[in-house]
Image (cartoon, rainbow, N blue to C red; front, side):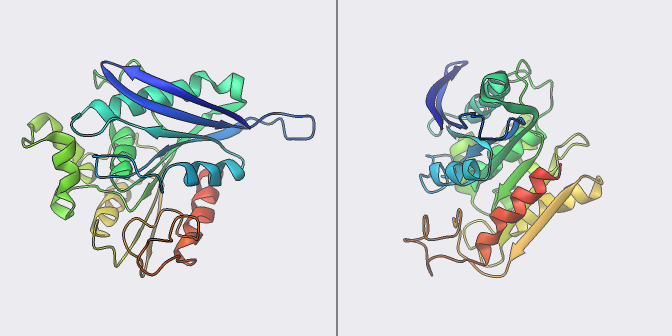
Length: 261
C-alpha cells in the first residue's frame, strides 16, 4: 500500500485527504483501478471516525484506490465543504497515472451529512463558480442514509452548513429538488427505522432520479439505527443493537453497482 495524507487548501478552506493506494507488482493486476472518495458524516460539525478509515480500508481491500476526506465543517459555511471535496476529486484524477487509477471510474461515497455532500457534488452545476475549475464530477455515487432535504428531518445539518439564513441561491441544496439530467448513477441505501435521518430522504432522491430516467439503485433495509456505517463488528460496538449483518450486505451491493458502470 502507498499511504499518504495530503493537505487540501482552496479558496481559504482546508481539509485533509488520506490516500490508500495500491502498490503495483508483477504479482498484482496492472489494469487501472477504480477510485473512491469517502465523505464521512457528522452533521457538518465534524467528520465521523466510524465512517472514515474503516470504509476506505474496506473498499481498498475490494481493489479500489481509496481516499478519505476530512472536509471543513462548522463554523465554516457553504460552499467550504463542497470546494474542498471538488478539489479532492480533481486531485484524485490528477494522481490517476501515478496511482494506476482509471480516471473514468472515480466514485464518491458519503454517509448522513457526508451523503448530502456527496449528493451536492453529484447535483452541482458544472458552471458553479467556486468549483468550475475542477474536474470534480463523480462517475458514480453511493449515498448512505443521506441527508437530502431539511423538511425531511435533521435540520441541524443544514443549520451547520448554512447558518441561520437560507439564501435563495442555496435552495438547490435540498437535493431531491435539484437533480439534473447529467447526474451520475447513484446507489442509495437507508433503513426504515432510522430516527435520525428518516428514509424519506433517500426515497425522495431516488424518486427524483426515477422521474428523469437516471440510473439508480435503492435499498431500504427494514431495521437499523442511524449511523451504521459498514454495519459490522468493526464499527458497531457502540451502535444500538450492535452489528447488523443483513444491512452490512449494502457494501457488496454497492461494489457490484459501481463495478458494473
